[in-house]
Image (spheres, rainbow, N blue to C red):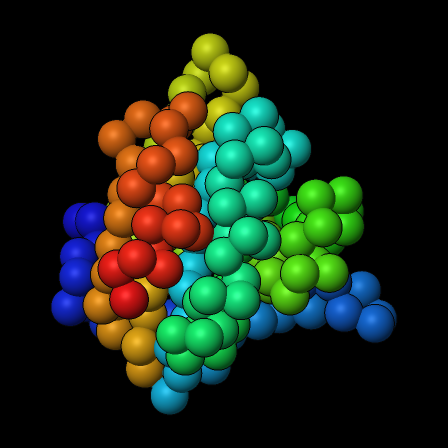
Length: 162
C-alpha cells in the first residue's frame, strides 16, 4: 500500500556515515515533533537524480528553512558510503541535506514507493517523490509518474505547497 497524505510515516532504520563509520538513523526520531522535507530518488549518481532532483533541493534550502522546515533528507536505496560520497560530489551535504541510505529498501517498501526497472539494473529501488512530514504525519506527498521526471517532486514545487 502506498503512503498517502494524512498517514503516519512508518518507522525504519536508515543509515548515514558518522565519525566511526555507518550509523543507524531512526526515521521516527528524525520526524517526531519536527517539520521535515524528504525526497526519494531511484539511485545515487543517476542522471535525473544528480542533475535535477538534488540540485532542486539545494536551490530550495533557504526557502524551505524560511517556511519552518527543520531538516531536508534525501533517501535512496543505496548503501551509506555511496550516499555520503554522492552528497559530497553534488554539494548536497555542504548545503545541509541529510543523505540517508535505505540499504535494504525496507523504508521504501514500507511506504509503497518501491520500483524495479530490470533493463536499467534497478531492482527494489525507489520511485521519485518528495513529501513534507510534520510530527510524523505526511502533510504533502508528490510522487512522480515516471522515473526520469522531476517536476512535481522538485524542491521548488514543495516550497510552493508549504
